[in-house]
Length: 391
Ligand code: UD1
Image 1 (tube, rainbow, N blue to C red):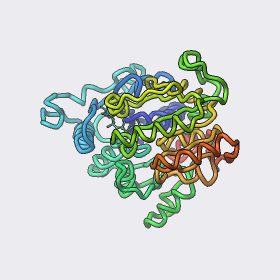
Image 2: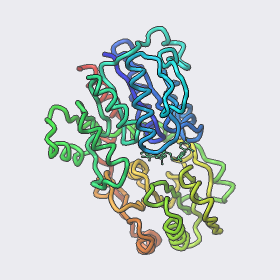
Image 3: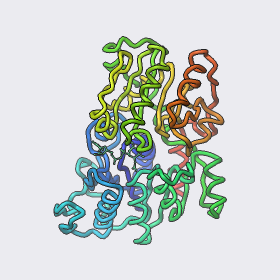
């Protein structure tokens, strides 16, 4: 079996790490290439995750960089297809005039496997999550008649204004095998008419990574710099277009959060997209500590010891569920409802007026304690690779 594994943006890296580790254990039985699309490229958004999680250097980096949704999608498809067809990529407007020989840019770092890596088409592509790279590579592969495996398939926010929802719908429509994280996802796929034998409930690879690294988490320098104390601070992340793209909305949201925190410090690692907008607003408050995006081990250290987390990320609500840390999600919907029905998460919405009552509940100690969803047990990647060996 020849398998391509795709990773492009920050939330992909913790999902592929345990799958790669399991594939390394059955070396020879499954030949794989690790392909980084380059959707995220900063060390803080990409490189540090490879180092901390022990992911081998990608065999190929398509280096697509930033752009609009369509530009990124087009560039990824064009470059991944060129790789699959083992073809020199010509200069085109969409690849910014660069000429690239993808057939010779294999094995940027993995000298040990260099000679064993295949070229051209794979039999299957394995994509994870819901980012632009997930969708773009699925389409390119499927059009060349490869099989598509979607890890975290079937989840839906039913909010078509989110780019991720479109990515999920398109990817799932052409997926051959779904590895799912929840019963809700299974049910969504059944309703869409997917055959039962395509749906494989295996659990959550992101949680494999979390459980494996719990004992390695690292206290960030922000801890001492901001005088943080165990369970006496908030961690906040915001990057969804619905929250951050409009200056006045972002300002109102942050103002309400700062007020509701009752002077408890709020540590806010700022995503590059949000940083661009914040520059124009100039928000300041004594208890608001804006810092650079953190690496995986430092970020999850902060989450584990926090009083509560405030976020608009999906993945973080899964991690807080497993760490049993209260989580307020600033979104009107979620594709991960089990983090609410089973876990410690509550959907606050995006209206700044909603923040205060949830803050009160937290300060009064009335937050639910939560349970952990079935099969979020640290062994999901083992189940996936066991299954892949039966293909
Ligand atoms: C992407 C994913 C989102 C995920 C998020 C996590 C899609 C549609 N969205 O959104 O699901 O939750 O990643 O981070 O795929 N930038 C940098 N350095 C980088 C990467 C990006 O400065 O390494 C800048 C870009 O120039 C751009 C902005 O950050 O202006 C947004 O990056 P982009 O990849 O377009 O989407 P995200 O908002 O990060």
